[in-house]
Amino acid sequence: MKIFTKEELIEELKKIRSMGWIPNARKGNVGGVGNTLEDLLGIEENNLPIPNASEWELKSQRIETTSLTTLFHMEPSPRTMRFVPKILLPKYGWKHEEAGTLYPDEEMSFRQTITGTGRSDRGFTVIVDRQQRKVLISFDLNYVDPKHKEWLETVKNRAGLDELSPQPYWGFDDLGHKAGTKLLNCFYIQARTKVEKGKEFFSYEKIFVLTKFNIESFISAIEKGYVYVDFDARTGHNHGTKFRLRQDKLTELYEDVRSI
Image 1 (cartoon, rainbow, N blue to C red):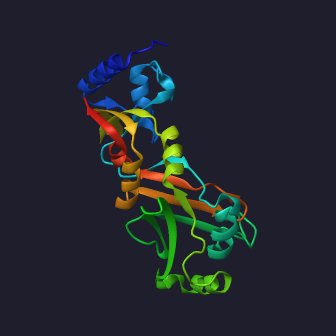
Image 2: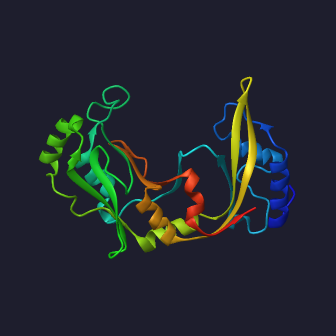
Image 3: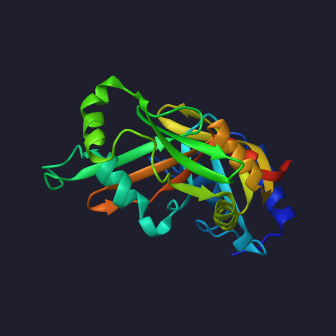
């Protein structure tokens, strides 16, 4: 496999951009925009052929999408409390929709995808406390949708209806370390899409080189609602707490954004 310098890779990407509409090489694959680009570059999946490859990644997406991409997994503090399986699930969870069929009758669920710009229909939100340098999870009964009235009564009996105490949180420094090791320097390409006669085509139009992940920008993205905290736990398994990003906001997390 050929090894490119960074500038040679940029030149290859510019050539691909000049090709215009290109058929999806992986029909039926939602990741086709990335797979097709890798095929055009002649590289293996997730194997960027440049020096210091471990510090870089190639990301591509459809320009029209605002779907979420997982940045990293990280459980909240205090870690020793195992907050999600030991507190949120048993005290604030609800009956799993597949309890009694796929799972046992008593299977519980705690699934919430929440942001810092509003509360979920079960009253949860993300709060950025810059003074304490923490990202916290908050609960407020006044924001619970009436359709969850019965659930709220069970919460009253299990945990009470006050604010979470203690509140699960992530320290800014811990987030910065985790994100800094996960969010690498990035060649970021956006593609337009169209479908003709049942066949999908991509036009790779925007090329960015993103360097120097910035924790302050990450915290701001949480405040703006671009970064979501995603809980996904059930009685039998905690799938892990994820930080997820609106894909079209990736450039906002880096200090240096170079448009090619």
